[in-house]
Each structure stands twice: as structure tokens, then as C-alpha cells.
Image (spheres, rainbow, N blue to C red):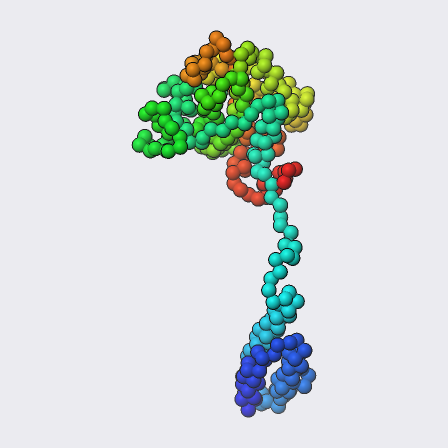
Length: 351
Ligand code: DAH
């Protein structure tokens, strides 16, 4: 008897409740079922007179019925609430309402350092030049006086394309191979072939090498190349320009030194080291910061400039290296992992 009644109530609720379309009606109806005098409550009161052995079964039936009724009520109230919301918003979406506040992004820490360096050089008259990431051996090596047996030309050191590949917007000089550029020095040649001195450029960009990634090596990294060619450019100009750069980046008290080195495209060639008392932990050591030198006459020859008339200096800065020093990052791989928790540590003043 009880079970039959329960079934009746359940099916009544299922049939009737979904027709309710406002909260007041819903509340009234709900109390006729589960309120103190509701139908379900009345039935539960009958439990007291159920013989002991039937109690477990009755209890179970009542619970099932309660659950089913509860489910129906939840669905109905949800739909009533949705309707209320729509009523408040009007029948269509209003596109003139202010949008939710969007989270602002910012430049990648490497881009920030790139922009700082480029900005610094542009204030002293250097224009920005661009080359291509996919290069030919000619621009990347031959024209820079890098001989055919140089290790950089080894398949193990660079990413070469198959000889048969052709790329319509990067012209080959002859039968050489394409490769992903191993340095931005190729932009020196592209610029020297296109423009007449005086030339003052910085060329920021991505480079590639077949390095096994570790804390200080990445197969993909960034450099800024610099080139200044004119009549009577001297080593003093190189030193003064790069000193200015180092002091702007690492503080006015920074000191630099040039150590003799070798690059096929500069003669003489140097590594520039700096040291800065403003660098906390790093303040008591010389830190290698870039390669540089006076443009080799062989380079002028490859681009058809007379080295008796023109001279120049060039330099190549690794952006990650500077970024790691400035930002206190001890593993280069952090820059490429796209971990938002890392990137958010370097908010950018421009964004
Ligand atoms: N291209 C060199 C490298 O990737 C860096 C470099 C050294 C660039 C000396 C220069 C330079 O312009 O003069 O290792």
C-alpha cells in the first residue's frame, strides 16, 4: 500500500513539477509534497506502523522515492533560475555591456631584453636590419670568410636542408645548401650587398645550432648582430660603442676588457668581458659577453667594397646570456618551456 502511494507521488511530481515556471508556484507545490504536511511526509509517518520485517524494504522504497523527487525538483529549480536570469538580461545579448576584465599579457622575457638592447643602439644611430632564419651557406659562411672545412659547416653542428630543396624567397648564389642560420652574422652580408656605407645596423633574430640542450645551451637561441661601416671607423669606435652598451645595460660602474680571439670575419677579433659591481653575486668576476672585431678585408671583398676606403666593426651578442644575467635565470631552458608561472615573473612595463 505504501509502495503504491509512493509510486503515485513520484509520477505526479514528474508530471506536474516541470510545468512550474516561477519560484513562488514552485515553493507552494514543493511544500505539498515534502513540507510538514506534504504527501511524502505523511507517508513517512506511516513507517511507524509498518511491521518490523517489512521495514528495511519500506525504508529503501522511501529513499528511492525521495531521491527521485529531489532530482526532479533540482532540474525544475535550475530551469526557473535560468529563466529568471534571461528575464534580467533581456531576451538578447547586449553587446554594449562592458566585457569581463581580460587578463593582460606581456612580452616574453627574451623579447623584453631584445627590445632594450635594440632601443639602446637605435638611440645612438643604429637602424634595425633583418635577414632570414633559413639561410644559404653563402651568406652564413662563404661571404663571411668561413672556409668550407670549418666545423660550423658540419652536418653535426647545423641544421641543413637536403640539397634538392628549393625555397622561392631565399635566393641561392650557386649550388650551395640551405641551412637554418647558425648566427646573425649573415645579416652583415645581406645588408652590405643592399646598402651603401655609412651603415650602422643591429640585427636581432633567432639562430639555430645542433646543441644538446642543457642549462646553458639550446638548439634555438637569439642573437643581436651589430655592424658599423664607414670611412675611418677605428677600434676606438668599437670600444667606445660597446662600453656604452655595457654601461647602459649593467650599470655605469661596469668595466670592460677586450681579449684577443678569432673569428674568420673580423681582424683583429676579440671577446668582450665585463664586470659590474652592481651585479650582486656576479659582481666580482669577469663575464664574457660578446664576440666582436674589425670587419675583415675579405668580407669587404666578398661584397665588393674597397677595404682601402672603408673600415668597420662588428659584434654579436647572445640575448639569452644577457637575459639570464639580468633576470637571474640559471637555466636557459626555462625560456622555452612556456610555463606561465615562469613567464609571469617578468612582467613588462610596456604591456
Ligand atoms: N657570429 C659569432 C658567433 O655566433 C659572434 C660574432 C663574433 C659576431 C664576432 C660578430 C663578431 O659580428 O664580430 O659565434
